Amino acid sequence: MKNRLQHYVGRMVALRQTTFRKLAEKAARSGEILENRFLVSAVNRGMQLICYGGSLCVTVPASEIVLV
Image (cartoon, rainbow, N blue to C red; front, side, top):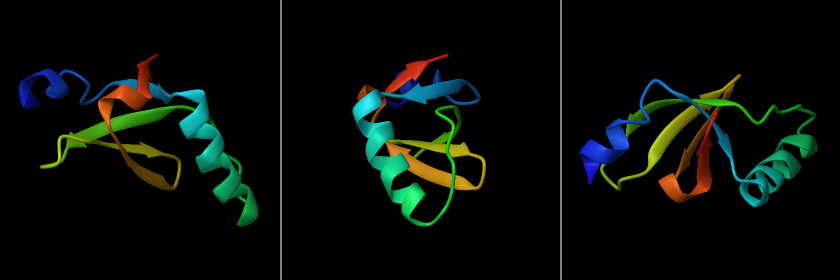
C-alpha cells in the first residue's frame, strides 16, 4: 500500500472540494487566503499524505486528493 502512495510524492494535487472548504474556513478566520494546490512531500506511518501549500501543512488520506 505504501508503494502505491509513494506515487504521489513530489506531485501537485488539489484537495476535494468538501475538504478544501473546511480548511479554507479555518484559514479565513485567521486572515489567510488559500489556493487549492498542494505539493505532496511524504507518506506518514498512518498511510496519509503530508502536503504543503504556501505556509500550510496538511495531512490527508489519499481519498481526499486529486492529481493536478
